[in-house]
Image (cartoon, rainbow, N blue to C red; front, side, top):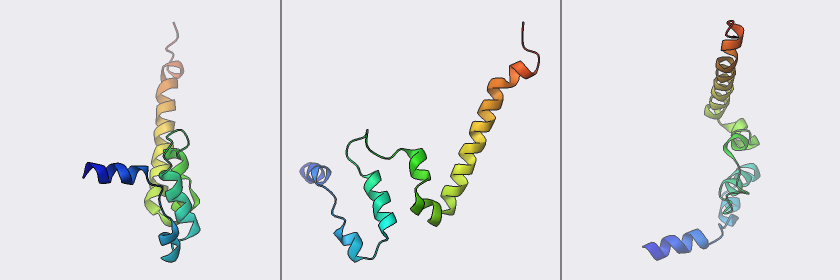
Length: 89
């Protein structure tokens, strides 16, 4: 079983089957970017959430992006809060 796992990891994915199944080129592009073996070249989560196929087809992704934006706004507010409340010495 371990040998099968190693062989699968080493093998390059075959996207021909996806094309034959009429999977959209945008979906194939998204999968390719997620399965890039080199972690430095692999798509990052923030970029993945902005991928055209996901943004067009996934309501959940839109909600996650909105939540991440709100979280960053809250985080920024918490960093500036002491300055706005007279926290200077």
